[in-house]
Amino acid sequence: MSEITVKTPVKNESTESKEGLWSMIRLGLILAAYAVVCCAVLALVNNFTAPKIAQNQERKVSAAMKEFFPESGLTFETVTDYSPAVVGAITVDEIYVAKKDGSIVGGAAQVTGPTYDQGTILIGIKTDGSVAGLKFLKLTDSPGFGLKANDSTFTLPNGKTFYGQFEGKNAKEGFEAGKNFDAISGATITSVAISSLINEGSKNLLAYFALKNGEEK
Image (cartoon, helix red, strand yellow):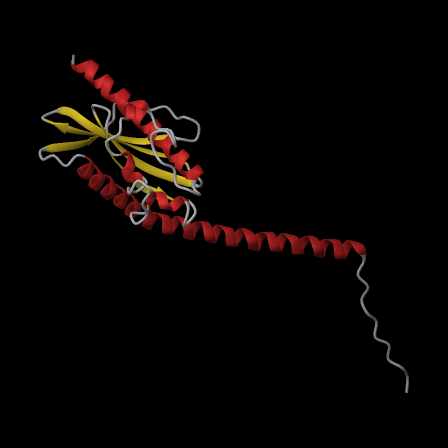
């Protein structure tokens, strides 16, 4: 009986190179397909959630304005004739005013910027420069430390919440930790950063008040 010899096909370097190239291309196409699908899903989710997020933001602002300026008969408007300058990473997103019989009695600035992570505040100021209130619209700092700034159950040694201590103070003097407001122990970066947001918002509000007061004279 004769022996049967099975010959194994020998791949040359050119064939192996082509197969390797095709494998890389195929993997790249698969990854690209996954990326396209993920982007499409994210865009779809964003289309559904963005309007709801905007509505929630509007409700927060509206509620805060009523809390800052509880006097009856007031109207609230979004300022469209003033554009605050961008200062570093801090932006004044919106400015709102409270009016009584057509005259401005106060306003609020929505300010976003870096804290320990990122924060958006609404600082309310009366036309005399006194702080009407401070609200957080967003704060993503460290739980247990920076987030104490927006914690209604956390109080400073002076008995007030971090955000509550600013009410009634003169925004014209600016705010400096340890000088005219208390920082949160263990969260100095957050405390100082928030004061920068307050100062920027106050500066632009007071400038707008002065501008409109000059126009009325």
